[in-house]
Amino acid sequence: MLYAMIDVGSNTIRMAIYEIDGDRVEMQMKRKHTVGLASYVRDHMLQRAGIDKVVEVLQEYKNFLDDLGIHSVTAFTTAALRNAINGQDAVREISHRTRTNLTIMSGDDEATFDFIGATHDLIEDTGLLIDIGGGSTEIVYFAKREIQVKVSLPIGSLNFHTRYTGTHILPSAEELAEMYAEAEATVSAIQEFQAVSHAQICGIGGTFKGAMALYNAMYGMPRRNMRMEVVRMREILLRFLRDRELIVPDKILLMRTVPERMHTFMPGLVIADVLAKRFGSLNIIYSDSGVREGYIYAKIVNNDDSF
Image (cartoon, rainbow, N blue to C red; front, side, top):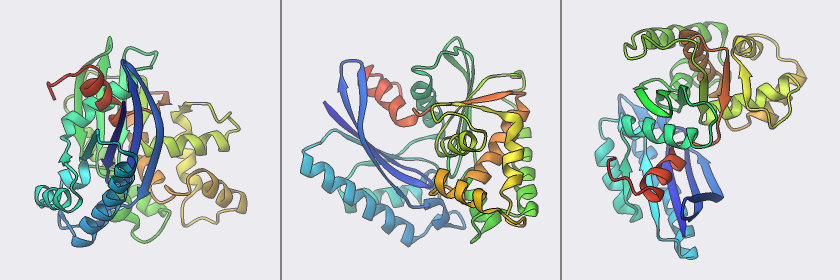
């Protein structure tokens, strides 16, 4: 069976098509549009231009799926519409205009599906799963392959970029300090993880994907390397500040490794750095699976209706 998953995120709108055969799940293709939906939110309201942009992309995806005769489709949206005052109304309008059943995924479910997808092939049975999205950050602490605590934080890479760097691509030293201050205040207020320390972090999502590519290029690691030392994260951030003169090799490095996420990888890394230091983590392991794969394993393969 071919199954399509459409994920309307705060930064990108993605479509992935999977072949499902029993308990075997294999991605066959994926497409994405970098829309920056969170930047269309003003005073907690998604603006008309943002709604129209989602409609445009979803209609393109629907036409593609209709032409191929793929009718098993799940479409969901996360923080950008979940946190908007008019989110429910916007989802109804988008669903009607595109004839697609778009739903809002709760932060709790997003964290759960992230966990299921990312840990399906993970060796570690205890640790922290962190997904830094454009508009929110999901954190899951798991032990013996079972979720112990999970939380969704209202901070993300794109909303940090929008609020602190505005039209600039890279932050200044002052803007970086402001992002650190907010991230530290938000993370320090979390009560659910008081007993968690020195935990292995598994990172998923675009921030960690981009950071991993940049890390490997900077430190001469093979492209297949999926482990990043936390101690080097601050060094990466300070190297690419807007108010220092970037040398040509560094400019090329950014263009080659994070071309589509050049404006959001540093805000996302700030959040990652604060979380890693809060939990005393020495390394971050990157996983390429997440919420979409978790949904398929839970809802389609295992037919779990508890969500």
